[in-house]
Image (tube, rainbow, N blue to C red; front, side, top):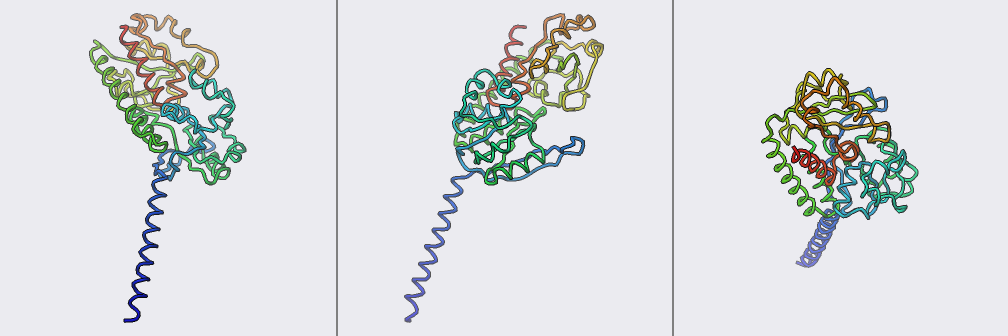
Length: 340
């Protein structure tokens, strides 16, 4: 009987320890976010098959020191009003010129340090900054880069920021918006953006469905070369989401597209032609205007009826995947169709 008070005291002690541990874990969980990282790591020689990564990463909620290598992710973070949490972006190799005007105005400020280029991080800068979060892109996702980033900032969470680079782009954009919304405590705002996106897509799809013949082809003009884009690739959302009918349905997906001739376009004879001038977009020679004046394709339905849209390369190629850039892409197609 004399041992009973001791047992009661010991039990109470264990209860306090349990409660403290549980509360601590709950508090810690409330301060972090679980993020699913699913992406491909490119080999250094670019010949070997990419290594697929499927992992769950724990990210500090509302991180105060963020380095961003994906320009689409940077656009979304800015849309969520969290640009003050960013400490560095890729400014090397004319990085700032790849941003849209409003983004360039923000991130030209000296407080945003140079994190290297879109392809090659500046590991010394990363080591000095010791960020909480590093957001990589498809361009920077190589085994060497990721290994060196982990060495430079061992406590940083590394999250893949690029949206799906295929016909599922819109789904990817919305998923990334929610991911960044959770990380930065702006999930409600992210959901509102996604709702606006869905409404814009629905409105535009209705318009496309009323077109008499929405056959279309998407090509990239690259220093005088024409590259046909697969309807299953990164620009395939205009077919999947909007209802344009691809004249090149059988094309396989490739990094930059399949080289085609003027005769190919003439033979396919699309009613609508979407053109992205890659050279002009990345600061090299523009060639789209010259290509579109070629005699072989001048009598195609698209050119003859002025159904040609030269898309904004910064939105469609460099800053792809951001909430605001995606809305701008949809608006661009909407304005184009409204005039027809």
